Length: 394
Ligand SMILES: Cc1cc2nc3c(=O)[nH]c(=O)nc-3n(C[C@H](O)[C@H](O)[C@H](O)COP(=O)(O)OP(=O)(O)OC[C@H]3O[C@@H](n4cnc5c(N)ncnc54)[C@H](O)[C@@H]3O)c2cc1C
Picture 1 (cartoon, rainbow, N blue to C red):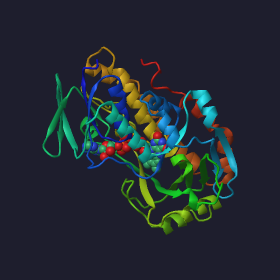
Picture 2: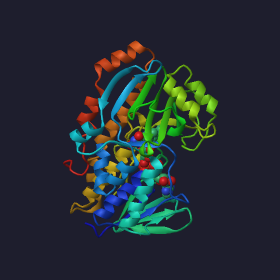
Picture 3: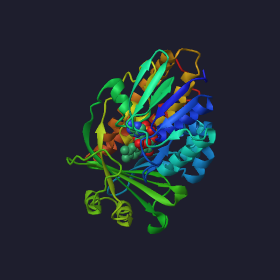
Picture 4: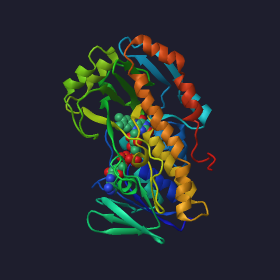
């Protein structure tokens, strides 16, 4: 039913990729973003095959592979000795199994590619400085209201406005967020500051008592992305842009493996960010007759499975398929939601479980947990194998 006009709130990774899918399907789309300029924070993001199918569909696979890194493996290591406890292959094996690559890319690079692709598909549809504050709907359409007093009218509204979504607040009320007990450090380090070949081009997870650390390369291997998850009672805002002192980061990782020390020592001391991670229970119903949600606004997840953006990307592809069904808008939105609720809830649940797995307090516990669980086998079975473009919708 491509003669429908779709309003998308939020030009993040989810909103932009959904817009590309919808434009490709022939819909009219307008995107409203509260920020004055488009952009993303300086950090990495991982895209497994389930998301890369969509990137291929919207014409971005080649550029993403070129500007990103295809890691050889997913490697779980002890925090102090660095001993590898378990690993599973990515790279060619991931592509052989799932038909699309596993890529690690800088968020700003991915965001830039998506924004440009939207512009190529339909120029001039991203409207900046447009903070949505609510909407009203009737049998013929939906009216979106902005903080500047203006409105926009369409047939369908999509809230892709992230963790603190105004659209979600109207649809489901305030979604309670409880502090997980974890903060996420993020730094990036240019590789020329690091010893040559000091860390393979793999996805490395160092697991230790009360914390873990993730290292991988982005920008065609020129930049190392570090995310450090630590348990702390000190709660701050959920924000990617809050800086914290470098010596606190150094202190949090005292006694960890020399690789971790090398990365922290090479960081710009005034460019260390820390984010307080919060839990939100997954929603079961996130749509009205004419409005729905996607991405973090519907199912915010902890980053412990590296799948939040991937879920937002999957959402957009399934939503475009659902809206192509010859059914009235409320049924189409219900169809979309029905096909996304269980999968996204499973990702939220597994991400939360991984917190316990990655933060075990003794080496013996870590060994025992990984002896019971084959992380690669599990993820290959249900997570990476999903193709949102071809999965049967019911
Ligand atoms: C430490 C960490 C590491 C992560 N690593 C990964 C990873 O490796 N792989 C992965 O798949 N995911 C990862 N994630 C999760 C991923 O970042 C998010 O799930 C993803 O960014 C969600 O995209 P989104 O478009 O739904 O929301 P956002 O990216 O938050 O975008 C929302 C957009 O809406 C705009 N907006 C908000 N309110 C309004 C409003 N009222 N009006 C207009 N515009 C508005 C915002 O300005 C923003 O541009 C990670 C998260 C964290 C915290």
